[in-house]
Image (cartoon, rainbow, N blue to C red; front, side):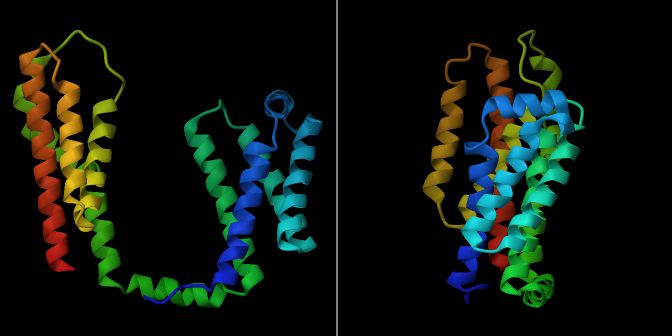
Length: 238
């Protein structure tokens, strides 16, 4: 498979990414973050952070235009984040997503790759493998979890337990399990699937609630079986 970009072009993206990681995580003291959250646009540390971010990006790429563009966009994104209610994981992900988009745009500008990227996206949109993989992975998240939940619903009332558990933890555990299994299967890592099954079994080994153990085991095996079936069908199609 040919490389999408040359090593020199990839290095530019790594430089921009490293500059962002250094300035947004390593070179930003906690007191700066707390002061920004408290005083928002009135915080001098906000502007110090923005200047540092632009300076490091410009230093790594050797481009003053990059330094200015990164600093201005970083300021806008940080101001948006500071005015969002609470420090939530969702806001953190959106903040990093916006920064990532800016970095990619800057990178494409530096390597003059907008037209090439358009051609790549068009080629990907016509690639059957890409659509098949996206469909399979998406199906293994919520839709397959819904199928497992419906199939095991008749036992759910029998295992009602007063013990507390994390909100929606089971749903997310199931999604991650299915995505891991699908990935392992597509890469012929059958040993890793066995290790995952063994690890899940060990977590339930000492549970003295037989009904709950059986309920979890049924749901887990059903989830694993359906995911493996999806993976095998996908491999046959591809």
